[in-house]
Amino acid sequence: MPSLVTHLESAIDQTRLPADRPQTLHKGRPLWVRYDLDAVRQTFSKDQLAQRPPTMWRYRELLPHNDPAQVVSLGEGTSPLLPCPRLAQRYGLKHLWVKDESQLPTGSFKSRGMAMAITMARQFGIRRVAVPTAGNAGGAASAYAARAGIEAYVFMPDDTSPINQYECHLAGARTFLVDGLITDCGRIVREGIEPMGWFDLSTLKEPYRIEGKKTMGLELAEQFDWHLPDVILYPTGGGTGLIGMWKAFAELAAIGWLADENRPRMVAVQSSGCAPIVRAFEQGQRHAEPFDNPATVASGIRVPAAVGDFMILDAVRQSGGRAVAVDEAGIRRWMREATASEGIAFCPEAAACIGALERLTQEGWIAPDDRVVVFNTGAAQKYPEAMATNLPRLRKDEPIDWSKIAGNAATDR
Ligand SMILES: *Cc1c(COP(=O)(O)O)cnc(C)c1O
Image 1: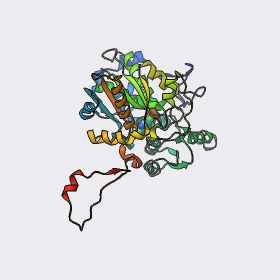
Image 2: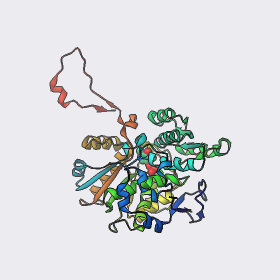
Image 3: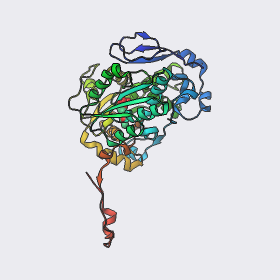
Image 4: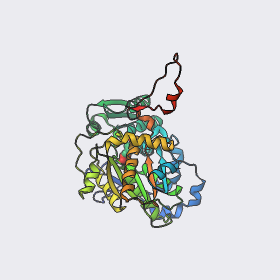
């Protein structure tokens, strides 16, 4: 069956562009992938869906690539939706879930976007890709490029977590450390397009990573039996996931699959150390000024300037949501409290969402009855700096003072 994509559409001025060739930006801004949603409605049923394997490719009528035999896959999706009763109780909620994306290939939800982008790149005959990364996008791009037999080049700030550095190299990508920010890495990738002949996989600079991340929204809807939750807390960097989920909900509504009118209020969570979207939200702007000296242990949201800023802000506003910056100094505490409460390894980005949850429940903006979902976008284990702790030591040759064992805690570094 051919894909049900009709065309690509400029997000800034709605210009139509053909989808049968590689595309990047239009007037410096991203593109939407558009489908024949009437055809999707006619050819796709919930019964059919129920028969399919639990991967992101089960939604193929709503994806740009439609042939499960031809996709570049490491078995991505479905991620579990885990109830969190202890955290719910702490914040006075009745219904709280974590959508645990840390269980995806390469330990983050970046695999959804990259599985889709690399699938499309291979279909278009692209042989070489490059990506600037705050960490996890590089890891995912490297893995999927290896899987597809495509050459990958990765550029990351030189203070990126060593795990991200090594995972890219391990997967065979030519990996480079840059003494600057992700925006500097992005410039290198852009300048290399001509001399190196690579395709730029930067966040939102090609249209398909959104479609991959959109599957988080499709999955969530299915897991909630098509009654969407009331609030989604999402750690926002480039915004692909938030934009993609909002698009997913619109497409599900258009094909008549949602059980009611309820749409989640989307909360874009950032750190006080890097909060360009929050600043623009608070000032009522549609575009965000670049954030100076961005610094946060939540490296996935250390994105000082996002090419899709207006798409994030539009989605947040349309949803009746908020953009919220949490105190950078609290992230490690929320990470440990949340992980210790539920046994889910919260990455620092998701810990920022716990900080937002704390604040928004205190303010009463999130009500006790609200059905709330927090996205754990990556695995804590990829962040040795954020996890680092001084553990108490025992000497094997000395008698153990048992009275000290029960009460002795590690001290955070
Ligand atoms: C990339 C990343 C984010 C931000 O995702 P966007 O969809 O680009 O906003 C959040 N958390 C983690 C762990 C990431 O790797």
